[in-house]
Structure formats: structure tokens, C-alpha cells
Image (cartoon, rainbow, N blue to C red; front, side, top):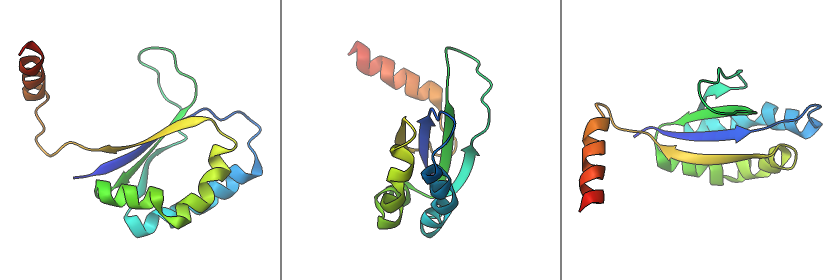
Length: 115
């Protein structure tokens, strides 16, 4: 099942030069794991709630590939170039299967909650 790396960051200009080096090198760390950017640096259109910052969304073929990329020596070597200069949060998420039925999930959660 497809997996994603999702990061919320709040960069403050001017950006440190390390951040530019990180950006120049991240793709080469993702390539062996089949990672590709889906969202990077686009200005969000806020539909609900307060928001400051930006999102990055990277797709991987599966959760093992996402975990492998994040834990890889190549990525860990450049990670401090971003984390030392931009506050944020990053998570790895497993996607839903084709034909996912959110209504069925809601019914199952309701049944489990109500005993």
C-alpha cells in the first residue's frame, strides 16, 4: 500500500544555506526508495482554522520504503541541515487501499466505541 512522508514546517526567512544544500540533495536520498514529491513549497489555500507554514508530501511505494528512506544513512546525513534551521513535524503515514470505504470505518468505530 502506498505510504507518505508528511512534513509541516514553518521556515522563517532568510533561510540558512544548509537548507538549500538539503534541498539540493534530498532527491538523491529518495530515489533508491521510489520516493517522489507530491507537494513541496506550494502556498496553501486555508479552508479551516489558523495556519502558518508549509507542507511537504512525499509518496513512497509502501511503508517499508518510507521507513527505509527516513532511516537511511544518506537521509540521516542531511536531515540536520533542515531540522537545525526550520522548526516542524514530520510523520510517515500508510495510505488507504483502493476502494476504501470511510462510511464502513465510521460504522466500525461507532460499534467499537458503543460496545
